[in-house]
Image (cartoon, rainbow over all chains, first blue to last red; front, side):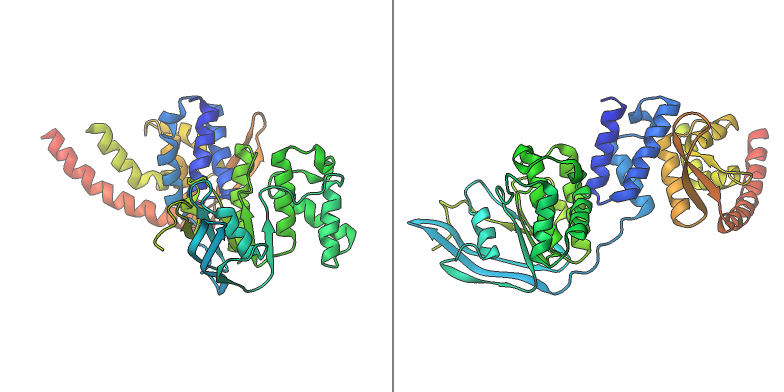
Length: 272
Length: 112
């Protein structure tokens, strides 16, 4: 592991411990400067990335997130069948303002279906979803228009809310920057990579200032850096008081979420 | 055992040493480590030093700003605040009052 690898591992460890933004950037940059000037093996100079990140957390203390607010999304007893196949059985989830909920489970356990039911796109066979406030849904695929520029997507979203072109474009580019993406110079959506199209999708879903944000595995095709930016962004939105539901098959971010809904595999389906 | 003990002592006074080194002007992490080593305290690893600097910054005893060096990379320079100066005076005197009798006792023991 060379110095760059060590620094990357250290940054990831800070991230896991919810040290984000400028603080993390400065601490990592300072360690990098030190290593550049003094040389030496980072494992001897700073120790294991994990241990050093823990020492940093102890020194600065991580800011506790604001208390969760009122219930924004309440899904109760959701059951869904496709033919004879029971995809969801009696699934429930409550998410408050200022919380991130993760929906996890094996492939085919109904994660995306559950999210689409929460979004109101699919009706459940039983159960009820209550949403308080404005809802935004970011699908796993689609949602972008092939022959439009990212800027034009932002203008379109703005138009739906009565926001004029210029501020809509500005807001879109600013939201894209939070994901480490420069949308102002991007090509038509159909020429964007899958990961970048997802960033466009995700950017649009945050532009409407939703109270409830539903994200279906929003990082398909993301590289590691973008993935880190995504979770930074989600944490920021959460701390602004949004209620976020994110479908994921990646479990390594679960220590950053407040609520976990673990769906059982469809074929077991639970008791009847 | 000896390096363990030295480490323990250091943990107790490293913040005071840093405050004292900053008394006459700003400095950055690597330079502080070199100054401590040159003064005979021994090598201080970054993993020990920077958490102390962060704590001093958080408690308002030092402030920090990033600045391009005359040559080389941007560095984070630390400056003593008025609170830091007061903490240095107060903590420094307490330390001196503590080590004087310890030194006297140990000296007798070692010489005897």
